[in-house]
Image (cartoon, rainbow, N blue to C red; front, side, top):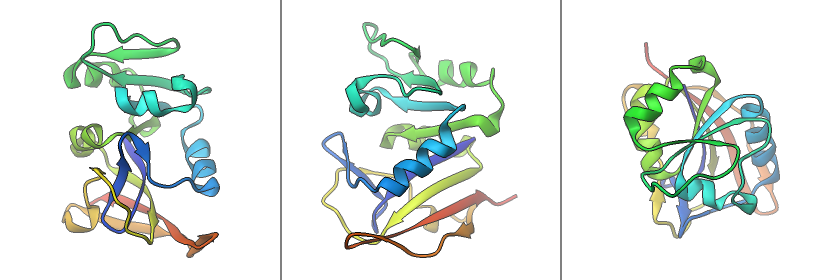
Length: 163
């Protein structure tokens, strides 16, 4: 399974249910990586999507304990265990965990690849991704050249779980 996220210097990913940064090339990378695949997210992440609608061209799985939550074009799972059972139907390499913070933490141990866009800036945030640089079981397997978007500096980093 894969994780995919954009993080700042402190591995922050959001504030008040919103992404910290919007970089077009990062959005394009996300689209290219996940189209035709299975994406897994929590309810708050789903509600932050444009129009609070499922992302086209993907199997959208949303984890929510709210019994009344049933958006169109999604598979809603009510627990971590139920989500794992649903994910067993798909090839693991086609599964992408897309957030938010608690979903990343719950699924981290099941994933073996993380696609991280690292933004060289420290944002005011309330939601964080696990810091893979401090976890001994993860290592960097690939890094893009440094990129800029206006005054933002960022890079794409691929992490793999050590065998």
